[in-house]
Image (cartoon, rainbow, N blue to C red; front, side, top):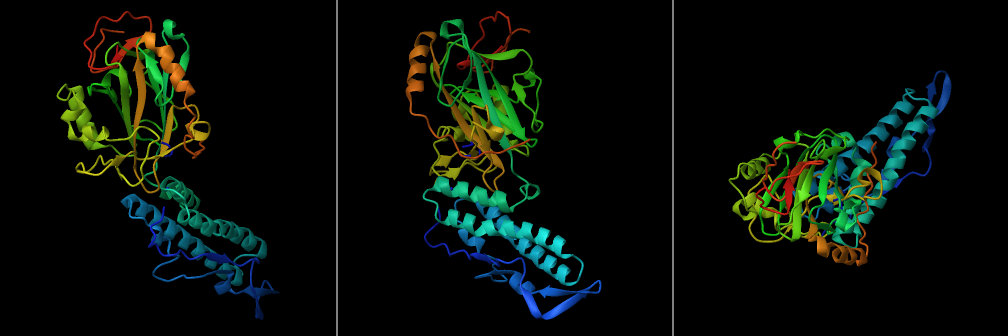
Length: 421
C-alpha cells in the first residue's frame, strides 16, 4: 500500500509548468504613494508585485494541469485541486495586500499572514519540478502525492482513506510457538492460529476475502458471525475476528494463499454483492464471478506497474491489458502504518485501495526451511510514505476456520487453507 500509501513520469509532450517567483522582500514600497492609517503615514504596497510569477494565464493558472499523464481519471482530479488551491493562495495574498493598504491590517498582522502564504507558495515550483523530473513512474506518483498533500487541505481531499492491516499469528509449538506479525510473502504453517488487526483513517468500508491455492474463495470480512460490521470507525484498532475467536490454518491447499482487501469511504455495492454470493454458497471458486476473478490479475504486494490500469470495482471489468493494485504503500516502520503487515493510502484524487496480500501456506515439517528461505531474501524497501495521526459448533465457508481459545474443533468441511471456527 501502501506501498501507503505504493503507498509516480511525465509524457514528453507535457508543457512546461510556470515557475512561481516570489518577491524576496516582505513587500515592495511605492515611494510615490503613502496612505494614512490612524493619523500615521504608511508606505503602500504594490500588490501587483507582491507575488510575481512567469507564464500565468487567466484561463490556465500556473499550467499545473499540463502535468497530466493520462494514466488515470483520478489524477486529473488531483491536479485540478492542486491548481485551484494554488490559485486560492494567490487570491489570499492579494487580499491581504489590499487590506494592508486599506489599513484593515497592521504591519505585524500583514507580515505574519502573508509569510504563511509565501512559505506555502515557495515550495510549489520545487514540488512541481520533482513531478516533472521523476526518474520512474513510482517516483512520479510519490512526488505528485507530496505536491497534493502540500497544497490541498485535508478537508478538500474528500475521498482519501488510509488503511493498515496486521496479520498476526500464534505459531504451533512444533513451529516455535511464538507470536509473529506475518509480512507479505512470509510462510505460515498448518495449525497456526491467526487474526487481523485493521485500522482505517477516517471511517471506511473494508472488504477482505481469501483465495486458496486451488482458487476456492472465502469471505473473511464482513461476516455476521464475528460481530463486527461495516463501516469501521476511524482511528480504531479493530480485531477480525473479534473477541477470543481466531482463524486456524488447516492442512488443505498447501501453497501460495492470497488475501485480497479493499477499502473506501463509501460502500462498494458491486463487491458487497459478489461477496454475498460467496457467503450464500452460490460462488465457491473465484473464477465463477467476473468481479472477483479480476482480483486474480493483481500483482503481489509491492509489484506495481503504473502503466497498467487500476482494478475497477464500480465499472464493468476491462478486457485485455494489465491490471494493477490501487493505493500507495505506507512505511510500516512509522507513522500510521507502524506495526502493520501492510499499510496503504489512496493515490492523489483516488477513492479506493485494492491490494493483494500473499503468504506461503506450508506444512509443519516444511515451515522451518520456508522461514529460512524467506529470512535470507534481500530486504525490500517498503514504501516511503509516512502518515501521522493522531464458542459454538464451527462453521466453514473457506480456508479460514473461526475457533475460540481452548476449543477442540470438530472436523469441518474445508474449501481452503484457512478455516473459521
